[in-house]
Amino acid sequence: MATQAFDRTPQAPAESPDNKPYFDGCREGKLILGKCKDTGKVFHYPRHVSPFTLSNNVEFVEAKGTGEIYSWSVARGKEPFCVAYVKLDEGPIMLTNIIECDLDALACGQKVKVKFRATEGDGAPVPMFVLA
Image (cartoon, rainbow, N blue to C red; front, side, top):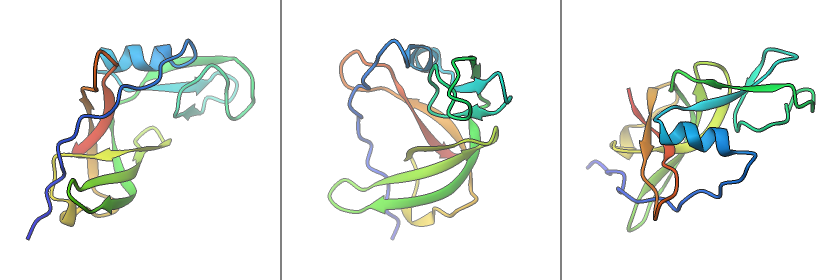
């Protein structure tokens, strides 16, 4: 018997000047990554300081919004859901949820694509993933 992911509404994210470009992108339906201009490496969670060099020589770039399940776990209970690490096609691995699927059919390596989920109140939508 299949276990459907519960369709929950996440809490609104805590926004700050440092993550504003990220959540502005979410409002536009774009997944934003940080890019270290010194190394050319991209990273998630985007912020104004490079995790590679600790410099502020950073720009924000749009990701394709596609990747694959790197690792996952299902919280089973009254409202089952999946917490997963998704390896984005650009390289970074992000913590997220896999939604709108049979939780019993998930596997590492499955292709996924971003889907923005509305949050409580007037908060920015958050990126989650569905099977591609």
